[in-house]
Image (cartoon, rainbow, N blue to C red):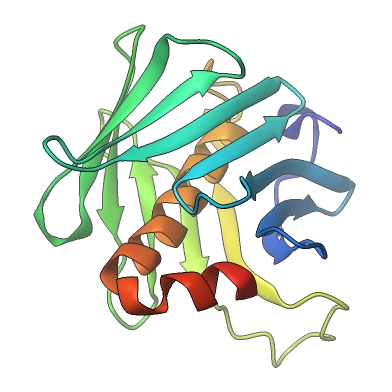
Length: 187
């Protein structure tokens, strides 16, 4: 898997991966730069892989509604996402690095991670209009854009794009728990 920091970063697209469990791949022109796959039987536990490593993401509900990021097979939270009202939130890494999660305008749909100066690090736009290009074999579920000055962040833009995609998927499942089982099969 190529590292996103060494590639041309546009366009990046989240697409479904064929298989029994819900899985997605972040595609760049040069190949897949990240994958996110939900674990069998658990729509809130996912595995993320990039050129920089492998992690798990887990949504924890009551009493504290958070999402944790850990290195694969680790018991230490590398980062914690703390949601705020209206779909906003904050991703805080153990190192102290912090990113704000903000929703895009309703017309666009999606969200973005911002750095401490309010500059876009990673932006995810849901179901983009693809009428102006050839339709790929796999449907494009979202566009991911990486802010140019942020390509070399220690957190890694591919990892942040995967965390953002996870947040959007889990949010959709939690908003409609009655459809969670059916949706997880369709993811």
